[in-house]
Image (tube, rainbow, N blue to C red):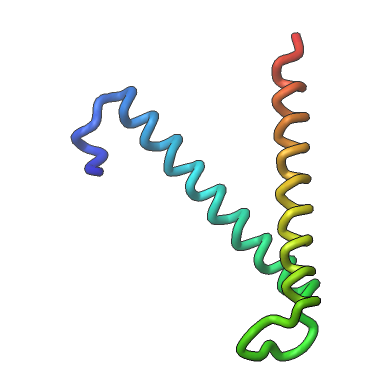
Length: 81
């Protein structure tokens, strides 16, 4: 998408989408780093062990759940008068 060809509303929408993509990418990178450091204690082989796989899955799920709780809390705080 060529930003110079956009009107003001389209440009604002484009920028918002790009910011959201950047936030998701940053969250995934942070989540990967945190969960990797927590769950992979040795040199990884060609496959994760069942314990590593379970740990990675649980770590990611807890992090995503926490992010959702925080987002909902911030939204409720913003909607208060």
